[in-house]
Image 1: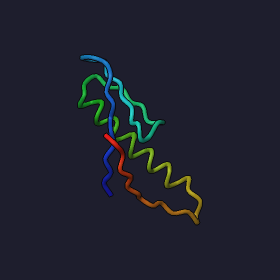
Image 2: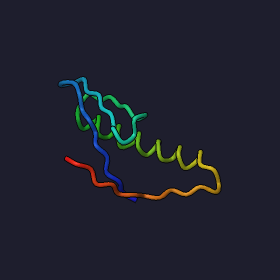
Image 3: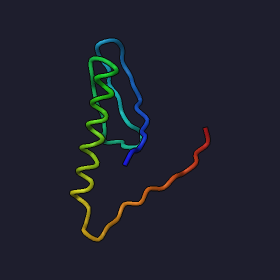
Image 4: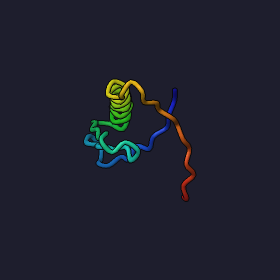
Length: 70
């Protein structure tokens, strides 16, 4: 499964931080934008692994699409 997330990047050369508005608990740091992006991808994977483990046996995950104004 592939999902797209927005990575909001702040900082300057050598000191970057970022967060994903869609997953407010995911905050990452990095020395480069590439490093920050890799950390964010890993954090999203860990987030979803945790969600899968914490779900009750009878629950399901459904993907929905919502159109938002730009």
